[in-house]
Length: 181
Image (cartoon, rainbow, N blue to C red):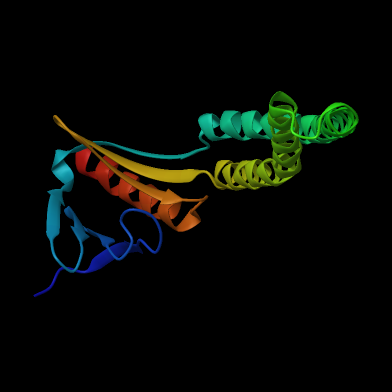
């Protein structure tokens, strides 16, 4: 006779996508299409469920925003200065000598700086988009179920705040504490 299932959680996102945790009266089963792991509840010392946000993602998002703003701030003045300098060099080259080697080189450098200044807003937009992506993943956070056994821990992270995993952990924690009594 098959033992009745107490609770079940299917991972739909994250590293364990496509697997499931099944809780029975005296064991926990983690099963995928390729493998199965059975953990007796008597071996579980603790069950922890937590929701965390990665502060590093927030730090990187802020750094990318500051860098994007710096690029936006530098783009206009760089373009203007390089365009003015290129115009002055071109006017001076026409007045003095039409072949002028150093003046041609200076004109090329200033035109290159002007083109570079025109590309900076696009780089700033790319950095801002990267910052927005990092902010999204920071805000989404991660719910992690951790099972502590004698010498090891098993962690089951899921992106976002997952009430289903929290409810499953609550049911599992009740079962583990009943086994101890």
